[in-house]
Length: 289
Image (cartoon, rainbow, N blue to C red):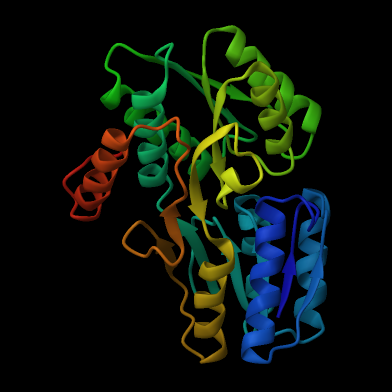
């Protein structure tokens, strides 16, 4: 198998999680794998095609921006299985894998609403791709349900990796009164977290339990465990069971989608509320977007 990534495999975020997911699955299942990193969108079709031509059985486009490229080339390689992480349109030899972004966003928003001192929060995204829009909408709804008199600001940087832009966006939202920031980019998340730390505000981590690296800044994390989710889907591919359908991981599958560790800035009462809230979301009793 091969994975084509839009960013670098050391970004501590989306791309690194994807690379490590494929790497771990390859080691566990005894599969040869290759990868291409920092692949610009104009170059994505050729990178994907190259792996298909060379006989790779599974070719992964890591990000929703690969949907168009895969759609263009999948028909030319009917014997190759393609997987689009955060893709939206599966079919034939194309599978997609994603997460229940609204649900995780809602929980993070609820925690933020209960913890915010100003009653204002900020969401920072890169591109307005479907799932990241939904993540922000879930975050806003959760915040407002916890804090009906609150307000949520949203900023789009149009850049996944520029640390300076990530920091600038966070600082701008903080200047408007937001004291909890949820950045959802790739490498640029680091910039947002740096800005939050400098201002003594609070942040929501993404992809992993970010409080480990930002103990004085992160109050909770939306863990989209790309490593485990990819492992599940790759195992299906190896077993010949991968179908042209969508594989979605939500709070009901905590191996791949779950909340992280709490900061001591989040009260025990809020933590108990969130535990009950997650049960209600899994039961379908809460509208998350």
